[in-house]
Image (cartoon, rainbow, N blue to C red):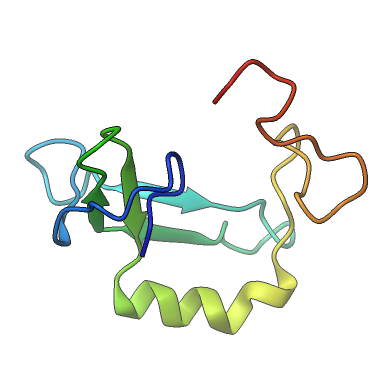
Length: 100
């Protein structure tokens, strides 16, 4: 596995990812509500690795959330106002935007 930011292979072991001392305050991946009375799909990233060269955090879903995401992935919609899909025409990514 390599860092998604700098490409380094020097990553830490997997650690627990929390945003505070509370177990309920975890980093969440959320998608738009699939219908008026349906819950908003939310997945908790409870684990991460850190790049030892650039310091980027690479969050991971736990096994239960990963399985739930896989089960509903085809029905998820992208968040409005988010960046363009990298597979779509015209996506620039970091190139040309002043980022590394």
